[in-house]
Length: 233
Image 1 (cartoon, rainbow, N blue to C red):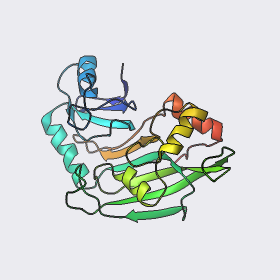
Image 2 (cartoon, rainbow, N blue to C red):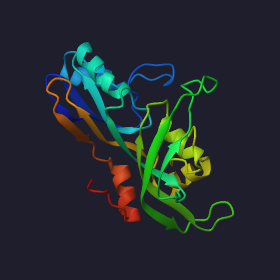
Image 3 (cartoon, one colour):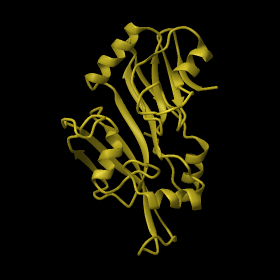
């Protein structure tokens, strides 16, 4: 059963699990499990995606109950009226602790034209672990709150890699040695990117909405192990 965070006649907010593809596409390869199909079986009726999350990313996903509502939500996303806050565990300690990454990105095809892309980040917590890797006897990691201001393909993942602080578990843009370290020492087999909070205007009532998705057990256990806590605001 999918974890439904909010539901009314117009829309549904789901806490998407990491590793579950949202819908059929050439990007996800051969799989029989898709979130839209599972949700349709669970709640019945029409389900239309209002936006997307990568297969490896967890967190808040909005699903409309009609094509009209999906279009209205889509306009908010396109008009940058939706606030998106993601939690990410990255390699190293980003400096400065708070900054804007302004770096154009291509679409799903790396050879495609680059378009404006910007992401704000804030370093929330740091840790140094006594595990040797390469020529370093200790490794540094940080918990980051990221807010994308545009909606490019894998934007946060690419922007954090661009500033040399890739997200742990990112097999396309991250560091394989650090990904393996998390599997071996922390039993963490997922990419540590989570769509934590989503703020938008309800497409029918206009009410200000803020949906928050709790972390899964693997992510929570890691934060506990590192002594990290989440910000209240």
